[in-house]
Image 1: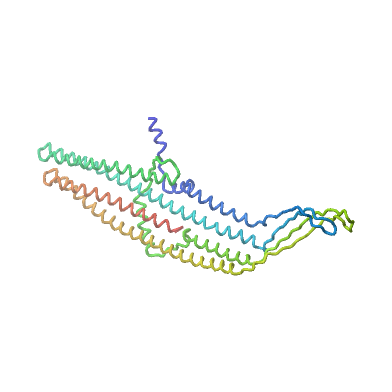
Image 2: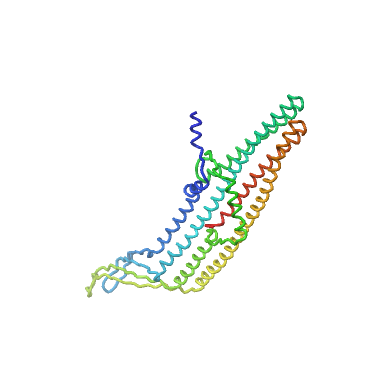
Amino acid sequence: MLFLALSCTCVRAQSLDSLKAELRRENPELRALQLDYEAAMKIGGQLDQLPDLEIGGGVFILPVETRTGPQQFRVGATQMLPWPGKLAAMAGVADARARPLLEKVAARQLLLIFQLEKAYFSLAGLEARREVLEESLALYTSLDRLALSRVEAGKGSSVDVYRIQLQRQQVERELAEFRHLAQQEMVIINELLNRPADTQVVALLDVEDRVAETLDFAPDLANDDPDLSNHPGLRIYKVQQEANRAAIELTKLDQRPDFGVGVDYIATGRRDDADPLRNGRDVILPRAMVTIPLSKGKFSAKRQEEEVRILALDARRESSENEFRAEIRRALNAIDNAANELYYLREQSQVIDATISIARSEFTNGKRAFDELLRLENQLIGYRTKTVLAQTIILTQRAVIDRYLINQ
């Protein structure tokens, strides 16, 4: 009982929305990308400050003799002053280069949510297929009773009973395999949510309602041209272009001269051989400097580089958008095909249900062979299994579409 109590604490029945919210909070990869963005946003604060004050000094080993005495040592300080607005522009470029990281976080989050949905829908599909197999066990049990009653009445063969037992054993093996497959999907979900791999997950999903919602949604989307401009995988190119344009503006300021101011203090000793006016007076030397960029070619090349990068980003954005639309189109085609198969399977299942009801009665009365009845039962189970697989395809392809449609 203690073991059962402990094992129950590891079972979590959560809706898909709650799992998504937990992924956004707990996924370590998303946290790392968010921290990378926050760290990159700190670079701008490092660049909008004045250059470091330069302080230097020296001692005259061989003092320079002047009229008022020998120079003994020298101390000076220099402060460079960039062209007005250059520091702010440098900080702006750093911030602009950091912003694409935020779009990268959003795009990666969409991908991880898609992986979560895919695993969750697969888990729900495995649960539905398990229910079908358990129902098939009940069918085989009732069929076994019919076969036994025929054997007892001397109208049937014990081989029929053994064949049913073989079918049941096969179903039980498939159920065991489904448990392993479900465990694999749980491992994926737990990894995405950063929790112990052995945590048991129960998929709380009304498959029928979700499939019906998707089938209502798909035709409207197929006849529409969705707006993908808000997708972070496309927004990132626009943000990167803003960084390139900011770099072009900074290049214009780099061509302007930088200024510098400084002051030197020179200590002078007194002359012993004479006593001139202001004998031994120290020297204070104010200084002004200017740095003039003479080579204009590198600035022109830098501007051209950024302009070409902007054009390259336009091409990449167009390629990504085409890829997104192709993914959506393929998903819609897969949904349409699965929907047609689902409609066909439901019709066939209704026909086989009615046929089996008649076949059971005829088998009991000795008017129908056991092989035919068993074939019909297996065909019904196969149709139900294919129905679940078609539903899983529809849900998974809906997840593909949701990955690209933001707020639609």
